Length: 112
Image (cartoon, rainbow, N blue to C red; front, side, top):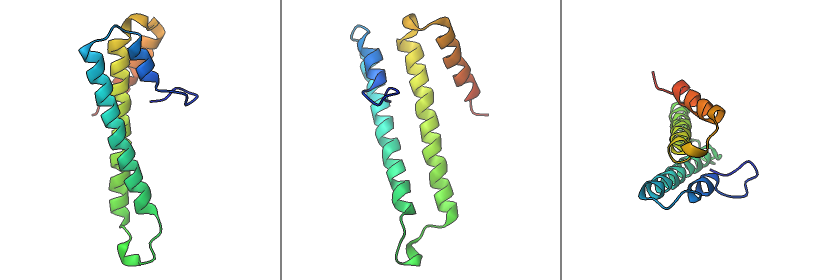
């Protein structure tokens, strides 16, 4: 996850302010792994949408829909995990308003 200006990893900056802990390292490793998987899924979707000179190699719309759902579900899960990570590791530095926003976002995203 990058900051609003794309200048660097925002979560790593947040986590580096805390004393080194095994939890912080594990959470960052998990976030990096999720981002790599999400990027690979997005690249697969892009490749599937590229025009094919042979119609028989085109994916059916149902398959593309399934791939899109997978990409978006992965992104939603990644955002939820990032919000949980910020709440857990950065809790002492969060303002009450920031904490409320993160909690409200997590509550909205609970699967039915």
